[in-house]
Image (cartoon, rainbow, N blue to C red; front, top):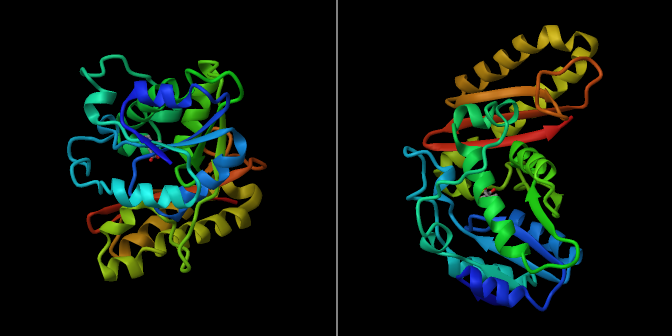
Length: 283
Ligand code: PAF
């Protein structure tokens, strides 16, 4: 496995290949990320994982400075699953000057849910993903794939829309959410949890599953009952010591409020102590 730190080296390394598959990450890899690499491998003739903690997608009060940087351990794990190339640029390499040009996603998709509670988050994500695509795919002549986890459901939707609206020659592939045996979705941020918080953490996914069941049971009365169901799910989690941002049922197609007959997804974000966790289930 080759590890490169500059855009020039990445392009030179990828030049002999026609069909790269990219797995963008911020490092501190867990088995969910490694599964994305396994998904990426058969899609092309060279598999690239990027590791870059992207300052643009963090608000000043968020965990950019403390986000775990574990490059050596990450590379060992990537080598073990057969990744071919790791692109681990410095901040200066990715942003040699302040990134004045940014990719601004549409408000109806990017200012709701995660974007409401993390203003500017999706602009930061889209900007770095667009740039990573330019770095990894500029030499490619054949199909290009990028793999994103389903755990970041809204992120994946925003990126798909970006690819579609800019007619980028990239296919977006979804990887399933990996879960711990108790059902907690794997996340680099799980490492922030204390032992007692870790035991409690599964209750976000349990609350979402139960909200999902209630939404399905509401059937034709969904639109009328949903505000009360969501409020009760938030109140139950609050009573357990969480600070929920949202627990909500949306239609899959655009994450807007559903009507009877829509395909649904239940999504949530909540803070447990200092750790903010997100999860979702299609129902
Ligand atoms: O999902 C992530 O880890 C990040 O948002 C991404 C896609 C690597 C962009 O920094």
